[in-house]
Length: 379
Image 1 (cartoon, rainbow, N blue to C red):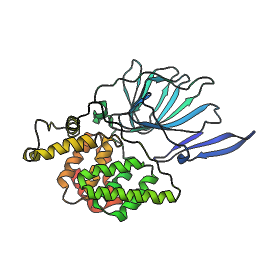
Image 2: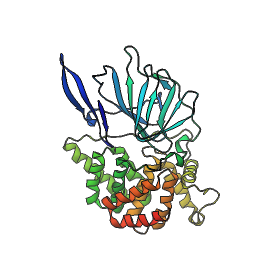
Image 3: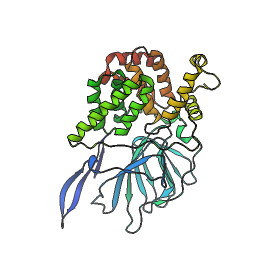
Image 4: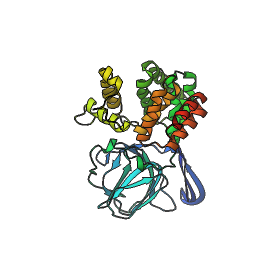
């Protein structure tokens, strides 16, 4: 039995005896990702947004049920246990897991975790990175394969806490992240002719409709409403075209409800200080002193009302921002600042170098050269 895990299409290959009708036959079964369906986590069992797709039961094992579980940044399960244990294989991103009474452990792409029977534990994404894992759980002959328990109590502001050291130095951009880059860049420049194929490529790679919409919502703060609205209208046209071709695209998650007692000013101020690594509350920039109202707009709308929407992670939002700033002319100062912010939210120099490669191959050589020159100043 083999598992082949590709970045955007996970295919379960089973080369074993497969039951067909009343007889067992020697056969290989391929289950396509788009036939698996997507189920979303319930609030009583998870904190934050997570989804899962159940895989076919492994015929040779009789009662082993695999599934792929996708956690958005900051999302994690309740405490729970498995009567027959569980294997977890991290296939993308970075996460956390903890056994009852133990310390929180970091798990990354390629790691394999064995959870023994009846061991109380939880697992999920890190605060700044989404995480997907393959879960392989033997199903008991009687009863459930998982026993759900109480919610996990993590430190306050877990969802926006940044741990730069938790990201491995050799990490690279996922296929999904790579496809966000040209979508953001061509929307910002208004190049609809290039945006259309970029949208098709992103959707084919598994970027959800809501994630692409959120990219276009986010970038209006940097490229303006006209570019954003033109991009959204192009996305609508693209989706209609794909629908007539019988293509069913993944809708993706909606933004969560606002936190209790949400204050755009307080939230935005905290997020901006966190991701810039500067205390702009007590040491405002020159523009903020000269035009205080623009600083209010930045805090309350961009870093508050937009960043509080959890459809995209902070890293996704930074990739969107630097894609826009790299594609536009006259934005070198802002691009330089946001490359530094990218490091603050956990992106590595290696990932930013990969970002430049995508710019060069899919956007423009000029944008790549400009970004590479600024990136060289950070190393």
